[in-house]
Image (cartoon, rainbow, N blue to C red; front, side, top):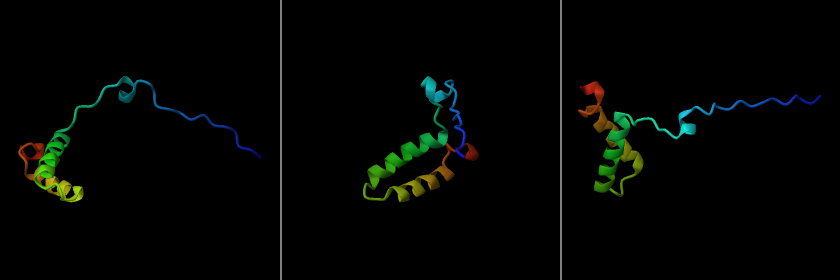
Length: 69
C-alpha cells in the first residue's frame, strides 16, 4: 500500500536570511577574524588548525573577552 504524500514545511519568509539582514558579529568572531589574519601573515606555512588553536588561546587571555573584563 503506497504512503500518502506529506507536505514539507519551510521557514517563514520573515527570517533574517529572507530579509537580507545579518546579525552583528560577536566579540569572539571579530577577534578571531583579526587574530587569524595576523597569525597567517606571520606564519603563512602554519596549518589553519594550529593557527586557530593559537588564536583561541589568545582569546582566553584577551582583554576583548567579556569574561576577562
